[in-house]
Amino acid sequence: MSGEPLTRVAALGGIYSNHQALRVAIDDARERGAQVIICLGDLGAFGPSPDKSAAILREEGIPVVRGNYDDSIARGLEDCQCGYTDPRDNHYARISYEYTLANTSSEHREWMSDFPHHIRFRMGAGPEALAVLAFHGSPRRMNEFLWETTTPTHFLQGLAAGHGADVLLGTHTGIHWSRPLGRGRWYVNAGALGRPANDGRREVWYTLLEFQDGHLEPHFVPVSYDVEALADEMLDEGLPDEFIETIRSGWWTTCLEVLPGKERARGRW
Image: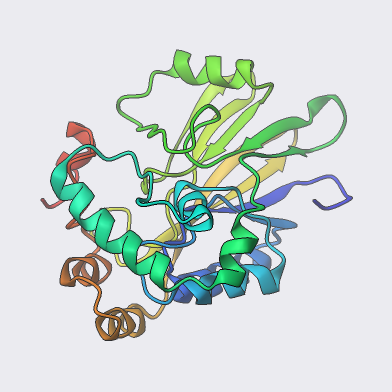
């Protein structure tokens, strides 16, 4: 991490092999003054040519938290450990995982094996500084889903206290959201950079944490990228039409059964 007090940190949630958006997001974060950029894991899944995203992150020296996909790919497991229970969700997860595993080089798999489960850093300086804990799903489990409408505030407060953190920073759900936890503390879900947030927008999102005047503010930043170039590559790679429809329409067509009722009601399907 940077030697100077951190006041702007960019967090990239699930990349899902969207190398087009990854390149744009990195450039955008730096233009916005991010001193540090971190990736919260799940480099592969959903999109095409997973080695391209891995190469960008390595070239840029961006630290990466171990996501369930990264863990499975590094260890050559049979599935993505995504945490799904519905057969339809698992059907598409299997297609995505088998493609990613087959198209990730041994060099990148070895690199992923060194990803930490957590990254800790501080924002600000002195007594006002905040301790940030970055992870993939939750501090206690890599593939735990923390949804906005089903995760109580007191539960998040307990997680923060139990893990010595003022700010909990995660991803895994694919939908960005945040909640103040009192006394300057926050839970922030960075969402996913790899596919739209099931909101009808073609843009994807990353998160910029800004510490100013003793207070932290999370900002969700939309990223516009060459959707059609990515769609063409997905088509060439033989990925499902459902995946391509999602990036073109902004609405999820898969991984729907895992959504809580209120989150699903915000979508099209």
